[in-house]
Length: 364
Image 1 (cartoon, rainbow, N blue to C red):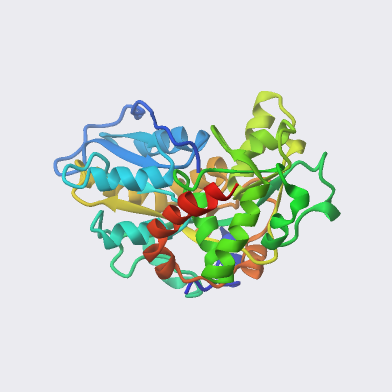
Image 2: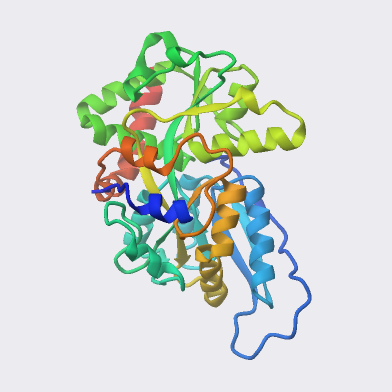
């Protein structure tokens, strides 16, 4: 069971998905340094991620700066497609690192299929000092928490008053929201896949599928590009299903590009999914040494600051500042977190996605 804590990040942080296509970034060149010594990792690390926004370029640059002789190339892929790619490439892996996926469920699935290699990042010992109410890493270190995420509802406060907001996930199935909700396609998005599994756990299979069919009647469309926040800010729909950090990314982009960040707000339902968001070394990746160095960087204070500052995700390393402009505190996350069984969720991931496609989508 995913158990959630109130002490971990209160202390740690007080001190402290998704387009279906791919986009590769050219390796970032590090600042000139002395020649690397013999035996140190060299070359380029290939990173697969569903994350989006400035954080991708920032971790590429930060990694290169922190590691002489190394560069990073990041490819963005929706989580479900990313897992499919790792499966297809199993005999000839093309990636070294996978980071992010809507929580630990797809990582459990990948680890069970032999797609991930065991590696404990250098600064990962801190995870075992945090509360055991969160699952922070695989027992064999095939995946490791890089940050913390929470699922909720993004909305436009200029159009929806606080008293009108759905307070629970059940409220989203109310017919008054028909045609007013947007979400990513679970076939490509780890966020939406996690949403499906969360509700099956929350309600049980029979009631869960009944609820999901009702909710789907209210979905206007799947998000084609970017995040649901963009459509909501434009007034095209009223509610979106996503994680808090995607709403914060949109607000940040609006601030930087002359848009209106006040068109986006985020609500955390009374009980919701809160999980660690992992990083993992790909089994037999082309540059395992560089992959290990990248995992070390992400768990370092510098890497954690990049995730918080540019990815707007809660860090796991003590002393790293929390995401700027966050709507909720880590205490809020823990107070509203559901008790979930990620092992069951991982075992039933593929089946749930097939049922969504074959039964939920045709119900409309």
